[in-house]
Image 1 (tube, rainbow, N blue to C red):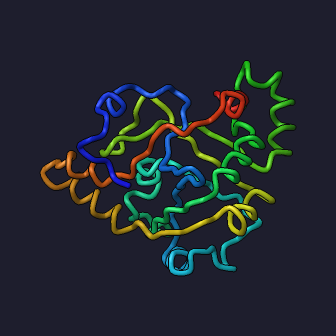
Image 2: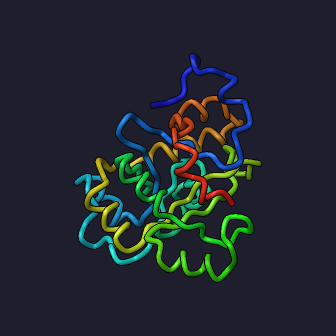
Length: 211
């Protein structure tokens, strides 16, 4: 779903909370983004499943923010990140990952001490970091974007249980990038962005993940 002229302007222009998950989501799914080399990304998009070559024993990072993914992969130009995938996963799986996550860095007031944080981090199948959200020029914004790292059991569940669909959105990335560069046509570029709305998370789900 793309943004339209009927969207509430106040919802777009209001400054989001510092730690808020914003994503394209439905009643049962949430879309996250990853970028891969074509030899891995293209088969995944073609079949809708991650192939056997996708290493399920390694940590993988998923990002609900399309623009943060563009910042990470350089609009699908960086080596090994030329294919951008929109991965639709179950909300049940996404929220499981959040409940079992630990912050990727020590935060005073969240963890009793650094030793406790290190212990929790070793045990956690998922980890969270909040990085500055990006605008169409990929400049940092004051509010943060969620990055969710999945390891071990979480990575396997993501690939083999939570994934509902995989779509190659590389062409969309290139089209938006062209508009950003062409006469600074930001309005047209913004229309092509996925509609990332605040994700309805109970306070308890993120209480342990506020940096």
